[in-house]
Image 1 (tube, rainbow, N blue to C red):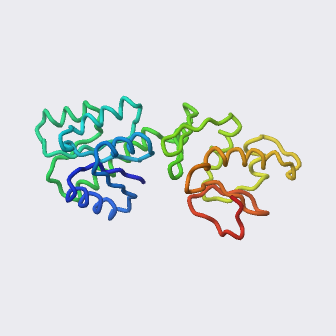
Image 2 (image 1 turned 135 degrees about the vertical axis):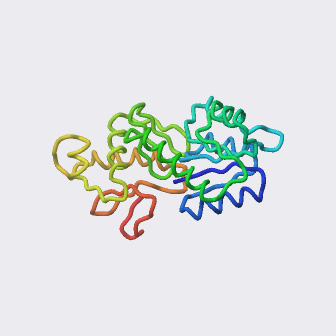
Image 3 (image 1 turned 180 degrees about the horizontal axis):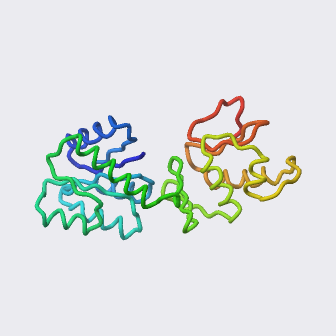
Length: 233
């Protein structure tokens, strides 16, 4: 799970990030509000931790800018402004939870866990993801690192199948049956052509390749790089 912490106080940022990393989350810290807004808008995160007072700027402005941009990422607001009116303001601005400072590390972790559970329950199986690649099965939207990727219907079905079988070796026969719905000569190059097009769309320009060809075996969608001797990317 990838979390982004936007907090301009260095000591607080280090404390929050250390606690979340201790809970096995992948955490990035951003102390600059402009950079934090850009990363929150342009990259995929499973949740955001957003400080309320970011220098001269109210964190709620950042939150509202994200919601106007169509980002539905769950947001936990951190703030020393702990009155009922301020908590209500934060939630109405688009926050999903509000944690008043000072807080115990255990409560921070528990609130993040609850936030992620609620998000997963809402998304159900209608959204699939691996690394920073996300598929929305309802809108048929695909994006990587926040950037939209346009896929043809067959390419979308192919990618959906790969993501549902992430970290598993997928053979040509499995793809022919699941994506093309019929059997024919497994030596045909139709799969190679489609895989090549799909790989270009989802991996080109990214440091981490996701779609791998295993020589003489099949294909693999994974964040982990297979043995170079067996792989052609």
